[in-house]
Amino acid sequence: MNKQMTDDEKLIQWVKKCRSKIYFSAPGTFSMMGGLPIELSTDIRTFATDGKVILVNREFAGTISDKDCSGILIHESLHISNLHHLRNHNQQFPHELWNQATDYIINGWIKSSENYGKDFTLPDFCLWDRKYSQSGWSAEKVAHDMLKNGWTPPPPPPTGGQPNPNGQPGPGGQQPSQGQGTPMPGQGQGQNDYPCGIGEILPSPANGQGEEAREAEEAEINQRVEDAAMIEKSMGQGKGGLCNKVVDSRDGTTTSGEMLRHFLRRAFSSKRSYQRPNRRFLHKRIYLPSKTKTPHTLYVAIDSSASVGIREFQAYRKNLIRWAKELGLNLIRVAYVDTYIHHNPETNEPWYDIDLKNGRGAEAMELDVYGGGGTSFDPIFEYIDEHNTDDIGALVYFTDGYGGVTTRNPSYPVMWVTSGCDPDFYSEDGYDEGAPFGKIVEIRAR
Image 1 (tube, helix red, strand yellow):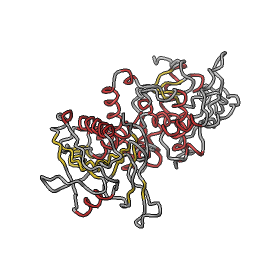
Image 2 (cartoon, one colour):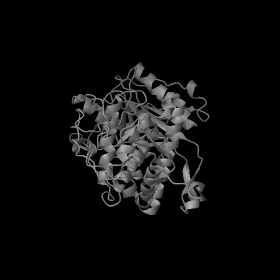
Image 3 (cartoon, rainbow, N blue to C red):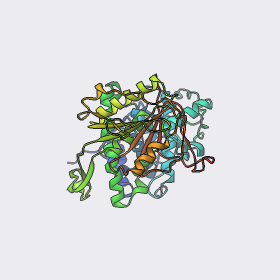
Image 4 (tube, rainbow, N blue to C red):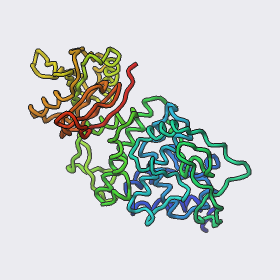
C-alpha cells in the first residue's frame, strides 16, 4: 500500500517539479542548485537560501504560480552563484539592505532573459528599478547608493499571520490579496508586504567558521559556476540560464575582495582539455573538458611615483602574499614604474623575480622602492608590446590612481588595484577621454 503524502510533502514535491522544469530552459542554472535540499520553514517570509539549502514558507508558496516558483528558484540560484551569502560576512551593510541591493541586480537579469515569461516569471511585487536593475553595478555599489539616498530599515512584519502578495494561486489553491507595491529604491520603508523581496539570502554557515572556510566555499561555488556556464554554452542555453551572465558580471568595477580574488583565479586557472572529459557530467552525456595543472607566474607593475608612500607599498605586499598562498604561485615578476621603467641592473629587464615555491615562500617576500618621480602608466604596456612577452596571462597594476594612460586595450587582462582614485584614460592625442580598460579594484592602505 502506498503511503499517502502529507500536505507538506506535496508542497515540497511541487517545488521540486518546478525546479526540474528549469533544466530544459536553464540547464546550467539547474546544475547550480538542483541538488540542494528543499525544506519548509516558518522563520522566513517567502523563499530563502544560505547556499546549502532552499527554504520555503508554506503560506507564501500557496499563493504563487508554477512559473513564479521556477523564477524564484532561479533567483535563489543567482544569489548563490554571485556569492551573496558570503560577500557581506563582515556585516558591512545591514542584512535587509544587502538583500534588497542584491535583489535589484538579479531580478534585472532574470527579467531581461529571453526565456522570461515563457518558462519562468517573477511575482509582480519583486524588487526592480531601472537605475539599479539595468546599471551593471556591483551589489556593493547599489547598497552604498541606497544608503546615500537615505535608506532606512523596513518595519518589523505585521502580527496576526502572513499577508499575501500579488500572484496566482499555487498548490494551496487560495487566491492572494492585493499587494501594496514595491518600496522606492533607497528608502526601504516597507510599502511592500515583503520588504526583503521574493527570495531572501541568509548568511552562509561558513561565515562563522573563519576565512579559510569561506574561501573554500567560494572556490567550490566558483567552480560550479564555471562548469554551469560551459553546460549552457554546450547546450545553447546561455541566455536562459544566466550563468554566463554571472561570469561576465565579475569583470566590472568593484571594491569586493571576493571579486578581486575571482579575477586572479580565472586569469591563472588551470587549462582545460577534452582529452580527459569531466566525469561529473558524463552520466548526463554532457562532455566538458577537465582541468590540467599548470605552473603560475603573476606579472605585477607597481607605481613607484612620489605620490605612493610606504603605507601603499605595505598594502601591496600584503595582498601579493595572500594571493600567492591562495593561488599557489611559483613566481611573481615585479616591475617598478613611474614616468619610466626602473630596469633590473642584473638582467636589464623590467622584472624583479620573486621565487615562491607554490606560495610557500610568500611570507619572505620583499618589495623594493625604486623611483620617486612623476606618474605614467604607459611604459610597461609599451615594453610588453614591443618585446612580445607572450607568457603574460594577466597584469596586475598597483597604484594610487593619480596618473594617465593612453595605451589601448591590451590583448591580456589587466587589473588596476588602486589605493586612491581611478586612473585617467586618454586618447592618443592626450586631450579627449579615452576608453577605459581592465578591472578596477579599490583597496585601503592602512
